[in-house]
Length: 139
Image (cartoon, rainbow, N blue to C red; front, side, top):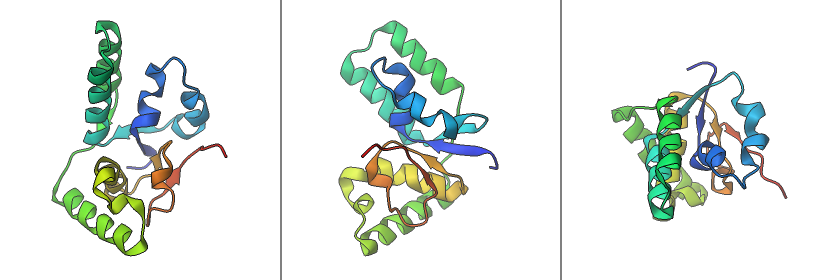
């Protein structure tokens, strides 16, 4: 998928959070790219909306954003990539192998499986073995 990026949940949902400056930080990584997400990102975003009690207008905005992007399919290759990455992270002492980071593990594995960069605003991805990470964390 040349010219594509996988977008993590924090960056994907930043446009819906009025008090967030995250969208502006990541424009340079998203402009002109095919925006893709792992299924976990859509589920995380939807759960966050339900948990926060979003109203119909914001739920509709989220649905429209989801309709405008490519959700990467999960195949046997993806499942194998998850297992391989979790083991590599365990061996390296990287946090993504821990169960609390399971959704992030799947997101990173999707980027690795499809061979495309991950755009994320979450330090848990820093140092992930083999991951092409685009991140703009401050300090």
